[in-house]
Length: 492
Image (cartoon, rainbow, N blue to C red; front, side, top):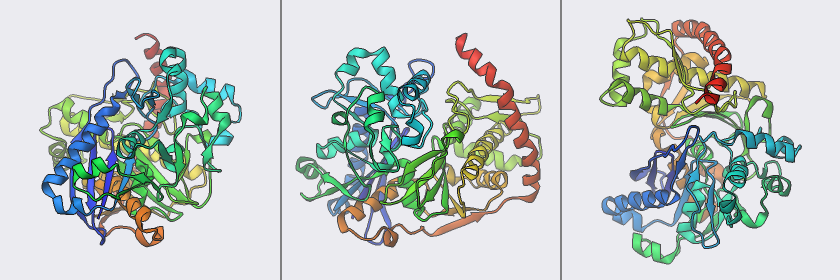
């Protein structure tokens, strides 16, 4: 039996997976995000651990026999979060998250200090990455920076609680801007550009390797055996790839989580920093991936549901489907937390454009679904411009439960989309698969197959024609508003 833990932004998911790769138990525990200032996004690192304990406690109550049979634990987690620890292993401040935009100026400073930054990391310096956040801390909280003994990513702080060891793995480390992505090792030059050294970094392993053993006291508390291995694991997107079988070059997936990700597996390192495409290590040896990221995806649906007083997100989706697409909906720019690919613009804002008296809750909801789909179309274009070979596209994440959204996405992207069984727990399931590989040493190709197909959504020819014109307008709207976004931040 294998336990997968996914440390997300809105919550922790835990799944138990048996030897036949069937999910036999799952649990969730919520997390909250703090936004104390404009562009800031933070969490208390100890909240991640409390949520893990809550989720595992649920499994212990519901599935005690299965939990006691766990041989390995895999970790998945939100990427880029800067978790600063002192020399006793205690957090020095709240973690600065992936969707925090305060460190834009620090990005330029890092690239000034190390002119080869993009060649070393394969990525454009972005405020969401970890390294610029440390430069910001050094400039704005020097006392905290001076006491920083270790910098960990969110899932690796959970690992520290599990094992007592400071360890990370390649896929998550690639999102720090401190990794030489082609060589799969820390870059001393990039660390120097942030005022850090290797001594402040965790040890690196591959995601399918063992990173240590679960502490015996914790194993006893959870009712497990004394020799439970903890796998290297993965950043949430690479873990989702393992869960949905995106481990073969040309396979891709779209993740409709809090953020939105378009992920393509590659046999070789293929950077394109100019298009704000991420070129990262995969969590399996000798694999890489390209990725476009939008900072707000399913979170936009959550936001508009609350804004319009819908009973729930599911109720709003039903209302959207019942209303159909007959009424021309307004445009929606989904930049509620700024945007990453392709704009690298933390100052971008969410916008409804073209509202009339005829537009009600369903029209606003549909505009949100379309706006997120258009943002994915921007991401798909820069991936193709970077030479990505996209053969098949799966859909995972909480938004994968919506077929009306799937129809919109397929029509905007002009591609068939494949939906798999249990697609909404992809990263946690992938983490459980990595736990198995760390315990058994099996070949990844034998374990990381594509799950059963639940259904396939094809583009709607009528919608394709409508969305082709609307996508052009969507792009024009951002270009027209970009100067106003920057001016708005200067005046608030």
